[in-house]
Amino acid sequence: MRDLFSSDLKMSSIPMEDADVSFLVQFPMPLSNDSIFEKLNSETKWLHEEIVVWGKRHLQPRLTAWYGDPGRSYTYSGTVMFPMPWTNLLLSIKRELESIVDARFNSVLLNLYRDNNDSMGFHSDNEPSLGKEPTIASLSYGATRTLLFKHKKKVDLPVKAISLTSGSMMLMQGPTQSFWKHGINKESKRCDSRINLTFRNILK
Ligand SMILES: O=C(O)CCC(=O)C(=O)O
Ligand SMILES: [Mn+2]
Image (cartoon, rainbow, N blue to C red; front, side, top):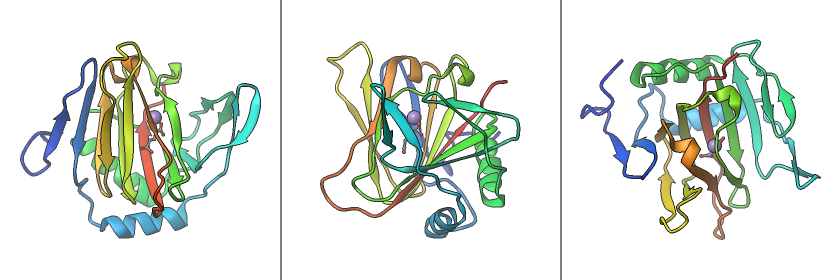
């Protein structure tokens, strides 16, 4: 493993109570951020899935796709999903990630925010299949969107806003999912598409 906080990788720790969140401005890859965005946009088998909110079915306000090792099913809003096999690009991103982060990943959830009207509701990545203190690496390509963190109990703590710029990598570890929810609101101003990749390790 390379030293995450060495100067060439410029990983900075984000000061937050009851959490372990760090941020790398530029995830190192041999392709440009724009070419990675274009390749992911065109190669991914995007799905427009439904979610059930208060017993009512809705289309998710974004497109998604799940890739990973075979045999790792994932339960999401009551639906069991099976991953698509790794593409060369996703595998090369995963390998680079595993060389700089002290964790292994066997799946990635991709989110495509088509424009400013797409969003992600507040949630914690705390499904039992992710284990107790999951390490989740989140990469962003395309338009910048703002991720908001809200503490679940200490409601007087300010909301923490993180600007997820193209090429950045955010790492959530330790107690982050137990104490905080995160989400991405719609924006009032028009913006281009953004692709997010959240690498996870699904336990058997
Ligand atoms: O788009 C993002 O940065 C957030 C994605 C996310 O929280 C998730 O997929 O669980
Ligand atoms: Mn999440």
